[in-house]
Image 1: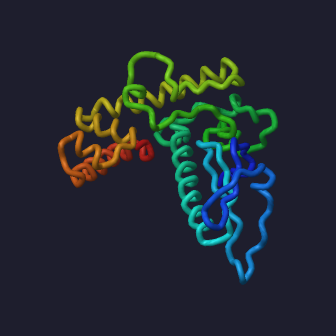
Image 2: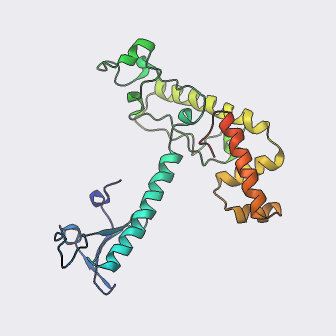
Image 3: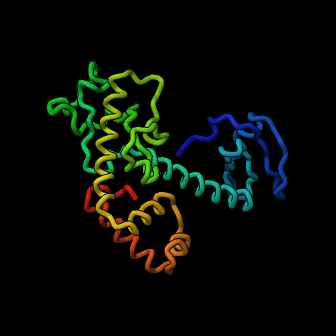
Length: 237
């Protein structure tokens, strides 16, 4: 879990036992709390809202515990979503990672046993690797024929050298080609459904767009996921 106490927020507050809050300093907000006792078994908790730039020190009571659990669930969901969006597409498909030992930044110091086969299965090269493509990109962006700059697939770091950029581009083209070929085999309705799924639309919203109920939507989504799974892209949708 992310250590949100290491973040710098715009505003720090303390929630009082009755639910009201008051503005405080960062130090006061994050100071250590008392340990749980028989009289007060609740731990010291905090509420974080990175989007709003807000951190709140919660009261050690049932109210604070409820706020903490709600916030914790939301933050974990965000982390899972970001991990999925930023996962290497080569790990989601049958496309092999193009990075080999000689391309790895740890090449001069690494003593991995994987060097014997060129580092094909080595995971250490993933550290700091920029070969990522978001799975939330639209089908138009993923399957387009032009070479326009894509904000999802062209997250170029200022630290990348020309050779790294070239390798990254080639890997992305290979991944895009695999997706493009699969999507081209789908019916027009399945392509629309795929787009709606990437856009995270609910079953109800999709049903309204197709003019059907939620039950058929669930069945069609399951069928579409099986198609991607059989093609080696299990986690794409």
